[in-house]
Image 1 (cartoon, rainbow, N blue to C red):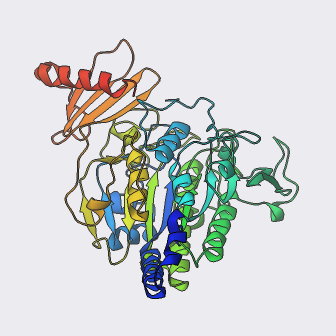
Image 2 (cartoon, one colour; image 1 turned 180 degrees about the vertical axis):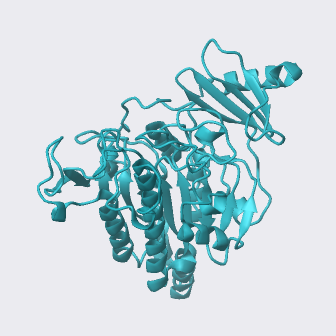
Length: 451
């Protein structure tokens, strides 16, 4: 329901008929306010889904989202690593203006404005599961102090890379998982092991059931298929998963069986979520976003090239070439978004906050970098970005239209690519286009200028 205006008391002076009209209008608007579900995988590559060209790993439910919705081909993560990417997503501000631009410790201050606080203040029920990374226990950055009615999962991102943790968090309450290992010790009982991803899905589904009668925002920031670099469940590799499933008999290295099984398990649970929406008659009024926090990893003994995880793109996680930051984005909203549609609209994580605000009928903050892509979703004309910007340690990247500039280190020259002709960034043409290169350098400076 929409919040009652502060001047509601003035209406008591007018006729009952007018009051009834106002209340009916508010109810009608609330009925059209969509539920918003934002699913984000961890280290899933542009080429890891069937609908983006994957030939081996099975992702039928996510592929079905694309068949029933819109697939973006030029969507970018907030960053090439975890924490700053999530920070960008929640604030609508790119890394030229955020407090951090790498995986350093950071937590939200009290009173921060995020997509979650905006939706909560407007009357949405707000819930999240998975990896948080933006506020450890006993800080102002914990989810319950940043707009979440309910949070279940990991708070510290370092712990999130263990899929059999000793505990998870329900808001600020530590939930013990006694069957899981303690440090490097043997687990108490195989039968009592808890795979964290399965528990996250259970809590996400329960949040939908509990809040089905009012508009809700669910942030499902899963940890699959991130690696556990300390070694996995049974084989010693870093891709932890309870079983390899349909990939068990493949003549692949164990890490690749685990990697494929993790993605297919995630796909299964996307299907479970959609099935629940249908069962509760919520599908028509729910918009689902599916994406990844950055490009594919090459960790835990998994090799990017084994399944062609970055597709046609160069680079992977921790790079600012396309493979490190261009990610899948699929959006489904029955009856509103054209089924089986594709867009080449250039967008990024910092666009989600204004998009969510427009969906809810909220005025977004003025001092952000994002532009709502709701017009694109609805098949309407769309305002475009002049440029998109990223930085990571000494690396910098900027995209403006077809042009992409990349600097791989502070002392390295600026590289220039024409993505219309060279999507894989194979041919540096900076010396052939000095005017364009100079303009890109100036935009890089402006992208980091104080507000």
